[in-house]
View (cartoon, rainbow, N blue to C red):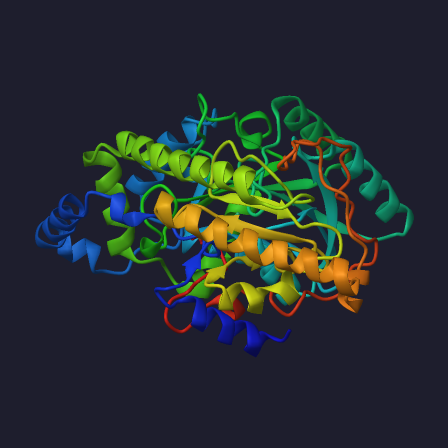
Length: 448
Ligand SMILES: Cc1ncc(COP(=O)(O)O)c(C=O)c1O
């Protein structure tokens, strides 16, 4: 399936009759839009001369102070000087890659990994090597093994890119013991860690986890964003980095955009200073928890034998493994004609593997729509399984089927060993890895 076909599919997916479990769009209708609107109007009236003026490349100093307060919820004790404001965390990813990666350099990333990061890495001609995960996140032994193998091959690893909390797309979270192990491995090897954490405050159980950067401020660059806790349309994110990297980020940001939108920055600053944002994050958490539950309950009730999926403790996504022989990419047109959309797993591997998985998001549709979407999907998968058992697997399903990660659940709740190993050969990204390829003209954005 080529990019134009994918685009066409997602244009169709934007139709109201289709339940989209594809897009990772936050449910911003839950924001107090009147209050935000009033605040924005007042901001322009009172401080328009600043809000509509150029700013500095590092970002508004008052906003950077507020950002340090936000990060303190995850145990990070940062000074505003360490923070660089960016156009969403996506720009931070781009700047970091631009600074560090030369063509052919290796970037380690979980397998599967965030599609927007893969697009950035490959656009700078990095070689992405995936490190497997299980239900506790990145597997430290696999990380060590990959580092040893690459060192023996004389290949240069520039950094480890990781989404430790409520992973996109896998829905799993790196547990506390593994956080320490991963940090230890990277510290001993002098390997920089890029911690991408858009969902960290959107956990459904208990307090936010301690960020990796909280325990190694010199070895970890932390990427944050207000896209999931306020609104993605503001395009305000940040990087918190050690001074040497911070300086290079500021220079790179300046050359990319001169400075960021002063209006958007001041809006976020004002919102954090004057609105009950912690309560609003709780509202989001409860809303997403209800939707997660609707999805998991429907999957358990309806999915055919042989499907397995993760149980996210926060964030937006469930990662579903299909029965052997069923290919998520090949199945997509049939799903669309059954009026349900998802993202095929191939978008989340730099080498285009992952056809045995798909990503479902529960953040945007109401619970009843989620139930209906899962019902439609279960029928499509059931029909595929029947087809396979009647006519045998199609050539595409000859792609090695990875066994499921530990802790993924299925209708019969069968457990098994962790093994999400991706093939050793890392080639170019699949034809659906670029976010643009996943954006339909009518706004059916499924890339995030
Ligand atoms: C893991 C991850 N990183 C980064 C981003 C980019 O977010 P933004 O640029 O809106 O801050 C996303 C968006 O969904 C994401 O899921």
